[in-house]
Image (cartoon, rainbow, N blue to C red; front, side, top):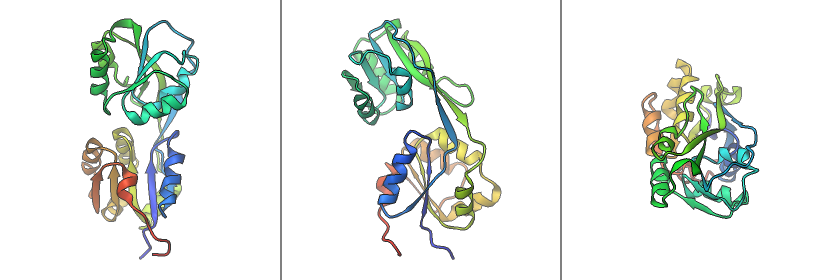
Length: 232
């Protein structure tokens, strides 16, 4: 039986390469397994308004020309760190989901078209967080678009088929759904020996709905994965 020494990272760039390095630093062999591409919108010209809200750091490339002193609200602290690194000076973070971002906007009295939600459009055409923006009377603009990848990378497929995969790391529900849709019945059976490590309970619920795994867990996948001694 082959040694389970490989870990699939199911997320697109940006973020994929960084996570793969972290997996490798923990002693595992990381395999890129993106099931979507992120296509940033052209850079927006500066628009009038007092604040911008984003639900993903994927929106940042389209905001490159926005004033760096404009208030920018993010869905969570991890995204806020990337926003600060991009040079924005006034950044506030919600507690990790779209509902909390809407609540943060209301708490600060940020309503109406002076607030812009710069968000993504999913591969089915869905406008992320459009309902939250509408409830606040805010403007919604497309900052990036998700394009589906319709098959698993060959390296990931072979590693699963050969029983070499220890774990699959999931960072969003949409990635989990697209991973599922790319599975063959033969590969689905192989997941009985694999750990599904998920960033949230919602992602774990999604992966549990379509396959039987050796183990499922919800937390930062890198924290759950643990370190592997070389040659063990």
